[in-house]
Image: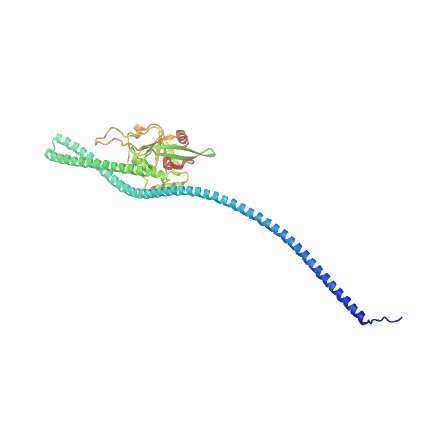
Length: 406
């Protein structure tokens, strides 16, 4: 049980201190070597990782660059193709632009022509009304002259009979001379009125032919009639085509008819009566309200009556399936000849004692060239009297065919 002695001698103490210093130095040295080795190992690992990462990044970069380069080449090729297509489209657009400019010029010219035609039409309508009034006055005066001439002739005959009996011979001779003188003057006036009427008719004919050529072309003109009719319990549709007389044969009548067709005036009109020799078409309709509207349109556009005078050309006779205007109204109603009516509706060769035809010919202005069987079917469905009936054959539409083709 002796206590442990911790005291050292000076030599021991020195020896111990020297040993501790050596151990400490060795420990520090080991730590330094370990640290160096650790740093070197870490540096090598970092260098390896850096090298691997650099190689990976370089590979990715090279791959991305190649992809980018390929995409650039593809995009450039695509752009070049699009440029080629754009150049082609540009050429096509330029051609289209040139074509559209031509079309625009043509449309502008058509619009100008339309404006000119509209102005001409308005002026022609005014001229028509003026000439119609003059014709009516002239015809009225002509009729009065004819009546006066007839009375004078009767007076002359009575006077001559009185002269034969010897009563008041001198007085009656003087009266007879005066009456014959007056008769001569009236005959001169009558001849003058006849010449004036012929001049006005020629002027209307020439003006109509010019307007017809400008407005609708040289012809021949065709009109398609689309019809609607009821047969039994069904409502059916059909059509027939009419070719009009040449422009130089019946210009006033053809122009007036085409104007009414192009204005849509015949839409809703009906085949309202069939007699032995003709089928009549006019401003009648199954619906009374619609009929009033149709008749009002004709009157508003001054087509009731339609013609300014009773135009007739013996070279275009009233044969079977031809179209004509009745002398009773001169339009807008017209008829289709079911048989050859040349003698019935044409001009009489015989003259009365005043030198006038016993009968002026009625205007004949067209012929059914397609669908004659449809016209005969219409005839079988059309009433034979003026009594109000239902289910009239109605014109749904009338179209100028060669005008559409132009």
